[in-house]
Image 1 (cartoon, protein in one colour):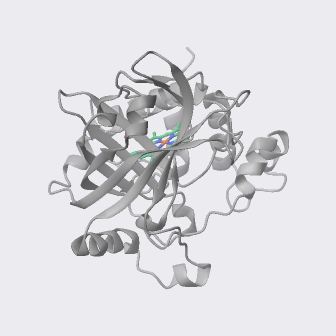
Image 2 (cartoon, rainbow, N blue to C red):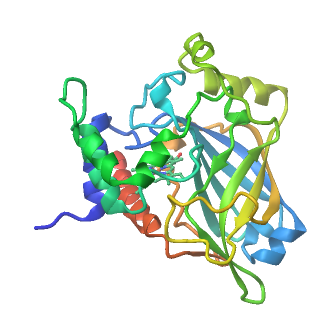
Length: 304
Ligand code: HEM
């Protein structure tokens, strides 16, 4: 019997990272924060989503990459850091943004991601060249391009730019539709560490740093939409849109402090397909692949 894509994806992640009961199969190490979102008037013109019409409470999860819940924050393999946001709009509508510090993704669809993850799992130390990963990359220029981009260790979660990557579609009050990609810009500016600086840091330095900053005051980011221009593909996350495409400031994300109940992290799940009226799915096939994989991961980690 053929296995479904979500199961194949999560099995492939587990083959690389192992099974850690209760932990997410990707971005396993994380912590929850409380905050609020204050929209700009431009946001409400683009989309009728409830969070663009009123100040809205947020719950945010900052995370390291990988499925390893104990990965040291200063391990180069902990990239990319993740930033997941849930808008808790009045009236109960919810919306998630699930972003990370990589611009673009290694592959354009879920089937290629299964093949990529299996190639990674089969290319450990001691495997003779050309490894399965060498062969995969040789056939996928988009993966070559992605892997060539630098992934420095951030100085702070508060000095990292995060990308939603998958295209979505705003639906305006009059029904007008505009495709876009989210970018989250840190108010503190972008700063990363040299490998030597990273080596000298503690294993939880990113989470400790954020707690220290929050003890001194709110930490802010600007939520931005990069709008698609004519001909920009919405179905291929490996193709970055030109940098000069119109960017609209949607509002301010303000983190106020750690969420009081960190146990809630285990029960919570964020999914970029969790959308309110006013934001629609695009034709990006990775969104459906993510929905399936996140569903399998959630079922396995919560026993549901
Ligand atoms: C087919 C492609 C992808 C697969 C199979 C995948 C897989 C997963 C899985 C299994 C989880 C854990 C879900 C849970 O148990 O709650 C997860 C979480 C996450 N993913 Fe992905 N992912 C993909 C693409 C992406 C992309 C493109 C991004 C960034 C734009 C991303 C960012 C994240 C983040 C930040 C989390 C942590 C969410 C949280 O804090 O709860 N993923 N991913």
